[in-house]
Amino acid sequence: MKCPFCGTLDTTVVDTRINDEGDVVRRRRRCSRCDKRFTTYERADVQLPLVVKKNGARVPFSRDKLRASLELALRKRPVTTEAIDSAIAGIEERLLASGAREILSQQLGELVMAELKKLDKVAYIRFASVYRNFEDVDAFSRVIKEVSPGTGRRKANPPPAGT
Ligand SMILES: [Zn+2]
Image (cartoon, rainbow, N blue to C red; front, top):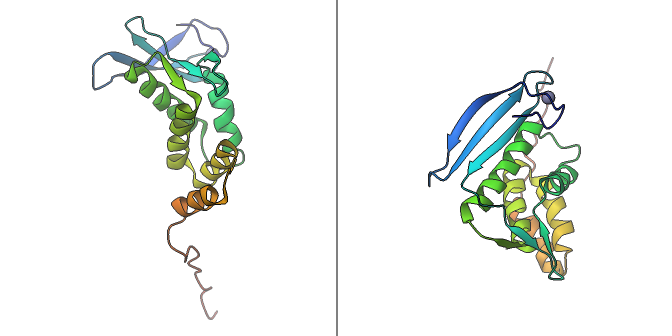
């Protein structure tokens, strides 16, 4: 399998997993030249679903766009590339496992939000704010409440006395 980053053919499989349904084989591969990692899926000839946009247009699922959205939401947040990769892989797995031919862009957005929520709360709010456009104030405060339960978020540790 050719490395998608540098094009070398010298890549090795570092991990192989089969999903619970037994219909998707997922392989983690490492490039021995540039050391980047990527994931490949093996499945009976079934494609990732088309994404149905709000205006009804259908566009192919784009991992690049998905990554760009995640990276934008996670900008300057302490989240590793590996974690982003695995979030993307998780979304793709769910899409593949669903077997759906089409997915509403809204539903894709929900999947992204679910992954962001696990990764980083700040990024989650960022994405949700853009994604939901805060059409109403209630929506915004709902999101805020979801990620910050309770009121006393700050538990200040008083500096040690003495010395
Ligand atoms: Zn490479």
